[in-house]
Image 1 (cartoon, one colour):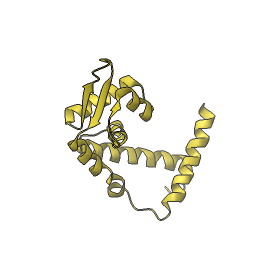
Image 2 (cartoon, one colour):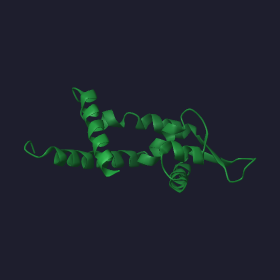
Image 3 (cartoon, one colour):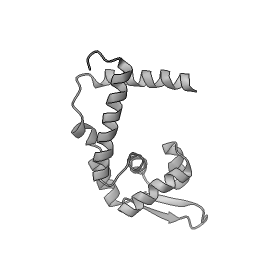
Image 4 (cartoon, rainbow, N blue to C red):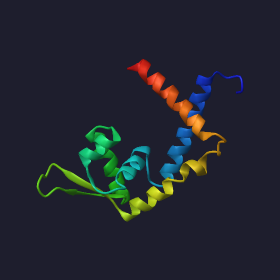
Length: 135
């Protein structure tokens, strides 16, 4: 592996990290999208539309994520009494507890790196450059 091109190393690392995250989150009854939604709900209730906007996903996508979180008991959705099309979403106590558990997953799953800030900066540079070429 030491002689692999950087792109192949990044791709392999990304796949392995993704598999580890999916498995660990699944054990908590979460998905990546669910974890993001629980994070965004930390400060307080949001409408489903506000939540979708903050997560940068379509409202329908957020709706599916919230359905799953609701089945797990991690969020509650209530209709707005003034606008029946609008739902207010709040994180439950169970949702707050599972969010807290999920916050340590990165440290639990992956080795501690000596200079994580430099790695993050390099990854952000790669992502930015690659995104600019795509769009």
